[in-house]
Length: 428
Image 1 (cartoon, one colour):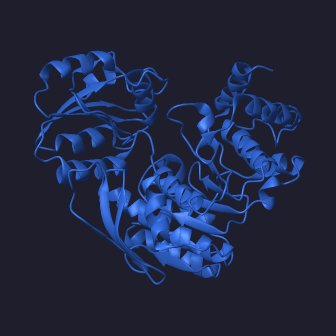
Image 2 (cartoon, one colour):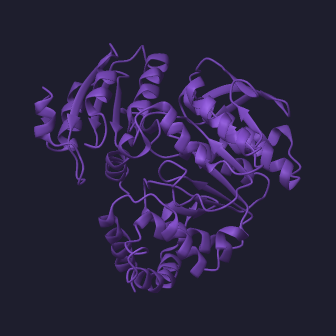
């Protein structure tokens, strides 16, 4: 089969929707000789921050000379980046080989009612585990797809589990309270395996800690067992902070990603790294932390793509992420006029997200639809009393006529929207 045919076949599985549960993935992995049991894994869940935390952790591990596999979603630049080794996406021909191995198994499963209709994410998860065993990677960082307890990545026993943040998202599946969502996320905790918890509310932590205690899993909480001191922004693009835990006391760490939340994500990654380093007896020096962190980059997250004009992309794709973005705008860009172009999916709380943006005094907002099946339409925006653009390029064209001096152009919303904008503006 050709690469294009493979991608079409994988995407065709999306027609079966989101189907939480582990029966299909367990059967599929059994047919592949359970590759997930042959790998050292860190399992990373949470509402937001998974991608950035994974990237920080990957770079810290790479600094130790390890070969690191990552499984992330959604993709920003290319589909293949979802399965990567040391940040390099799986080559087309190897993705084709993997898929050709899995297709006959899935075809047979489709003939059995209780195994039928394997979805895209299940197929990719199985392919990912098989690929990383074949490539003999040293360690794999696996992002949860949705929730945790019944997510199809939840089929292995990791070295460490990580829960980054807890917010309300996918409420139709995960529940409409913080406690319900936290219970789903806590489902990735395993017997006796340490769990690192990021910046979460007391309500969420209570649920997570009960799960951890019931499984005799050591738990470490950000702000209690390890912490950071955020230093005021400098003229450089990025952040600087101190980090302290029972293992290390690190001063003046710098990262190239913007926002206090990225300091939180980096801190969680450092603590997870320390757990892994102890288990694998890695000889870590204080300089290794700085070297590793400075390599970390995650596209579409407060990403500056142009200085003149000053354009930033940020995939604030749900309420929780938008709250973080608005906090960053107030903290770091209060002295600038912010021209914002927003596009989102109808599955999100669009009015809530727009309300957050409109609460920023120095922000001018334009909304737009974009080319994606669930993208909010011009008509839906107008029902909310907003004038919308048919094409984001038109919104950007009008914005460019309005900017002056060092004004900021912020393009935000759905990660699918950001991906499209990024590819066109960067000519990729």
